[in-house]
Amino acid sequence: MRREHIAVLTSGGDAPGMNAAIRAVVRTAIYRNLRVSGVFHGFQGLIDGAVEELGPRSVANIIQRGGTILQTARCEPFYRPEGRALAASTLARCGIDGLVVIGGDGSFRGATLLHEEHGVPVLGIPGTIDNDIYGTDVSIGFNTAINVALEVVDRLSDTAAGSNPPLNVALGVRPRLRAPAASHNRLFLVEVMGRESGNIALYVGVAGGAEAILIPEQSLGADEVTNLVIRAKERGKSSSIVVVAEGAYEGGALALQEAIRRRCGYEVRSSILGHMQRGGSPSTRDRVLASRLGYEAVRGLLEGRSGAMVGVDKRKAVFVPLTEVRAKNKEIDWQLVEVAQVLAI
Ligand code: ADP
Image (cartoon, rainbow, N blue to C red):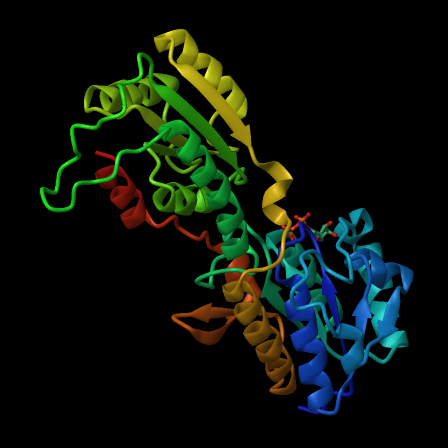
């Protein structure tokens, strides 16, 4: 399909790897002899006309940087038809005949409406650390976010375990040089992002060897968590890590900490990772994913695709209608939930 000038924007919560996706869109477009512009501050920039043409050097040295050079913003007026009409008129004025929206579920809703109401050719790229978007195995930012959180869990595990006696390989048992059993169990709660989705908690919990993982899809009460921890101590564990998705327990990790302390008197500490998980340099996986998706989005626009998200399914790029992405829920990996439970014995 003949296209002359496309634009790219990042919207909603930022995710590490968004810059790599911008770079891929810009360079692929130029390689294919298109003009390409960046829109600043998400949909708000479309309304304000904050649009700037980019060249291959405009995106130099950004692949390793977290955040997004185009910045994201939440845009209130875009919820209303008048706001979206203003955005469409900016695109028409600039002669832009294709738009790539990098963002999460909310951004895709806005993109779908722009496509349906004004016929703007739009493709979405999934960029959200939550990895909760239907139609793609993974979204940009998830891998970096779990690596950042895992590093914290590993450090806590080190302090929680104290001096860990080496496994006697020949006998396959711990030598008698056991660390003295702690008189009280040490329990660390780590709260990770995920108001409605337990993906980050599940991966971090499995990779960090957590005693229990609390996810919004299958929450545990304070009694259950306390029982798990008590039973772990009875089996010889002197410390435990519990990973809590922020939406999995009313009041978060701090409320859970207090509830457990009241029930069993164990020493409980909480770490709340919060926005730390969004920061940092994107991982190899996120950079490669973002590069692939940015490239595919431009290819898709040139093939005449629109109103779709480009995602990955078993390493292959796939285009999924935005209406389907919005209508369906991405299921948590229940097999992995079971793996986590079995491996916590
Ligand atoms: P995310 O894309 O990370 O889910 P948000 O839900 O905050 O983030 O959405 C980002 C932006 O997308 C919003 O600020 C708004 O401009 C636009 N948007 C979200 N939902 C809608 C909607 N229902 N209608 C129109 N625009 C929307």
